Length: 467
Image (cartoon, rainbow, N blue to C red; front, side, top):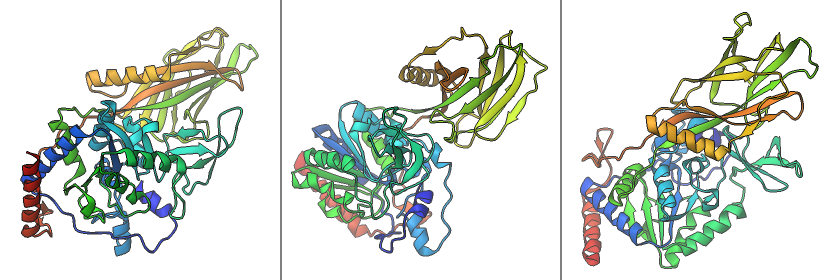
């Protein structure tokens, strides 16, 4: 994400401080801070989370300002790091899922994010409780009616440019634009207004994995402080807002949040990724003895949209051994054959997945019947996805597939069937606090023992006052 995003951004000389040394709290102090944060959360009435790139590094997405961040390496003239997996396959991490659980429990009221990776939406945070200040690489918006479209592929442009697609609303048809900001773009009111509102209402704002250097976003948490709220900053590097914080934690965000969830006795839910495909069958309306038919496996977002998680498709015909099998590698995946019209049969499709999926493939038994009595149905997308997720959790495997709906094609004779597929399952374990907090890559971090003792003394005073 940050790799492609950084390359697409217009050039800017001043990008703030980068490459600062990382600081780590010692285990005993870290544990005390985690417990203090948990108590803050228990006492809060309006909790807001403010997130940055640091919560997504464990998801395989490089950050920008860390010792090996994108902008740090660019400034040093070094090669950029390689992402662990394709950006479109990045999945919510421990912190994303913990925040989703706190929102579901009614504790977390709102999330403000500077990230464009779309992982908060994937984790289950409702759109109305999320402000994506800098946009979302997987979301585009209609310039006419404002309708939003969340994609399973990365939108090609940034800077709120036209993407070449159009609104699917028959009463609109407006041009779609990306939602990712470039340097000179102002924060959209649709995101900024609710973010400001919730910051003013918040009695506790937790900043997670952000350097708090990008304006005006970085000033939002201070609106809570001015109203008497508490500010907590969890970050490995110093930030310009550290002096305003009621609690400052130098540790990996996942480790802190795992400790908080454990202290609060909340489980971190697993993430089950469900992707969708569309299988279309078209055939001539004239009822001749033989029918030349076409089968197409494509994205639910349209025939011209990418289907990034499928690498290839193998098609065979168990009922018709004389019909030639096919191995499809080019998108959209299209198969054309001629068969006897009078006898229904099955096409056996093996969908081979690309990198980033937990399972290698899934098998689909697709029926072909040229009769007008073809069954049409709609099971409800939400119901199907929920059922698939439950099945995946029960047996701890991915690869489950289920049809969502089948309808008649609008432009020709044939049918279009939409399927949902479980392509990944990720469980998050609690992270133990190890006595290595001050050591990184075998060397002691640049943090004096005096600063640790002063911080420990300050923490001890706060805990004493509370008791």
